[in-house]
Amino acid sequence: MVIFVIFFVPIQTTSEELFFRGFLLQWIGKLVKQPILLSIIVGFIFGALHFGNPEMSNSALWAGLDYVFTGFMLSYITIRTNSAEFTIGAHAANNMFFLYLFDI
Image (cartoon, rainbow, N blue to C red; front, side, top):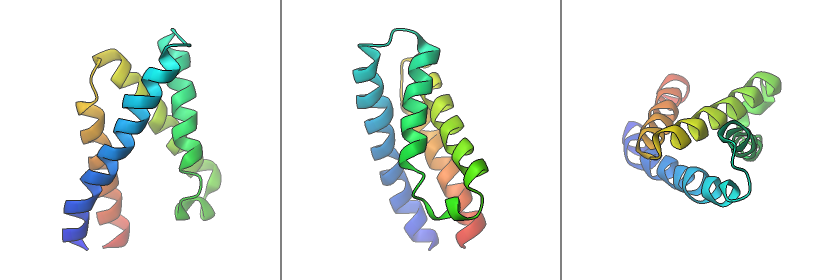
């Protein structure tokens, strides 16, 4: 499982970040010019698409809020830094941490 996490989590998280912070953030950013509102919209979409994850059955409210808040923060960081490198690393580190903590 450790080898799986090391090799595949960075691919998965980079793909998500490029879609959410690369494509979606820029596309919605053409319509919404306020960084906070833009971050809320993209963060909610990020969270909503993660609502099907297995941990939602344990604590839907807290896990759902965590996904939405994480999406908001990653979007806001991307807007403020004008770069996705930090959010790619933060997303990968977050997912690896939880996979090591709960699955291994």
